[in-house]
Image (tube, rainbow, N blue to C red; front, side):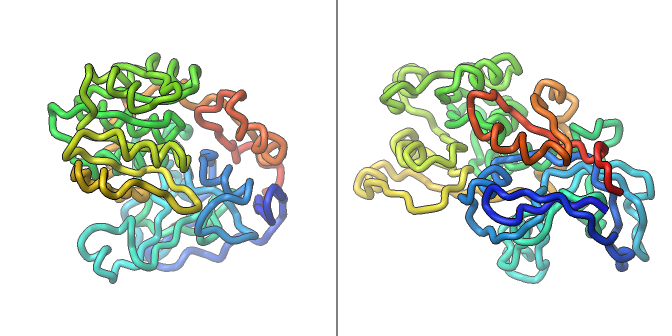
Length: 342
């Protein structure tokens, strides 16, 4: 069967490998149909992804079709199209026992810590498959990406009258905007890209999308009518932007870091302390967040989100181009149905 391996930085290789063994009890074998290309994949390709080792089969934003069942599986049937929750938790640590499976002490993420879904077939635990009946394959492949934003907003616990600012309108930031909109919140977004600001506005994800210019604090204050926002969610994964975001929440406000950067961040502790800002990290998502995204899928123009497509044969050519903002990628999609090796 076909497998795509990131052998080293900027070194993608197509391989013909053996089919996986029959799925064990509680697991299923799936045929991979679509793989969303996300920032994690692009950062790994460029050699800038934390928690990552080479070689690795990328791919964790997956739409799959159930191919075979292990013993005891009753939640899915052969032929079902499902989304995949790619975070494999131990189920035993304190975080897991309290429902925080996304930050399990032994967490392994497909395509990051262990091989992911850029292959024709793979085995997965049936507990990590999510039905979204009637949703096309592209939509199923968006569920994991969008769940990141839904989890981040749930972490922030915004009140109904809170002002919310999302910094960064990459795919994750757009998902944060969608999650806030699903709660009925008005969102102001900040991003220097006219293309991304236009997309967020056209899809009605934000009440206002602004260019931060050279002074992001002043720009946000002006957009919020002279005050600063109650909740700020930074989805940039950019050190300078994340450090600047410490200055954005109102006194007693909340700052959530959704993005991840490989390195250290610096902030002025006296100012942080004076304003008693609550700082939160948001990592991955849980089954609750996947269910919330699936409930929101009917409100999403899936075709508008998937702006670029590729095949296993062209991925190595396309991936470096998609890292360039000039290409205007919102979501790139790998079509595994175009495989020529089975």
